Length: 68
Picture (cartoon, rainbow, N blue to C red):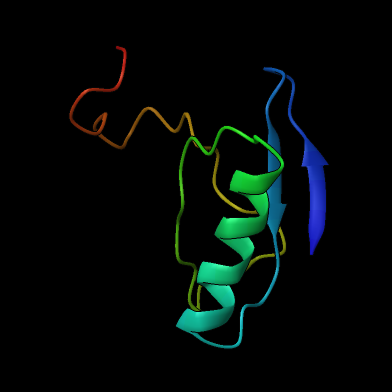
């Protein structure tokens, strides 16, 4: 996994996850560390650029209940 600090104070965690069970394990570890998960985005191998999209990408609508 790669941790990237963003200018807005958030940290992006990116990297391959082999299957759904591994993803759930990662999410559980984040929860156990009291990390606030703001967004989860799947990036397929054909769209991976090495830099995940910003969670504050203005071209995407806010999820229900998210602040504007």
